[in-house]
Image (cartoon, rainbow, N blue to C red; front, top):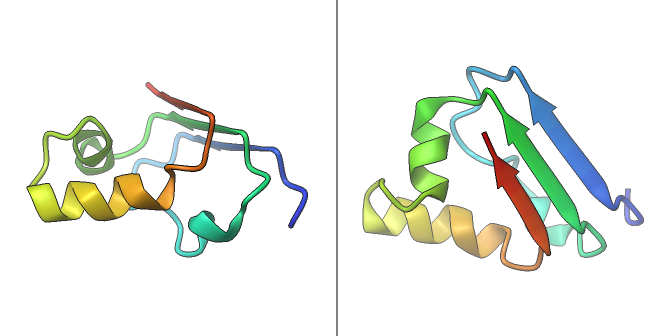
Length: 69
């Protein structure tokens, strides 16, 4: 999976945090999150608690395009 460039999560209503190890997918350029839990959306939109937001956002800082719907 070292060359994975795009990752999609769709209709994962129970997905409350990003997958462990996503920070190691260094070639990942695009991440799409559609119909995930409200908890995860809040973390990524920085509406959660400061520490939990920081952890989630730090793990995807290398990804050029992140779409949350």
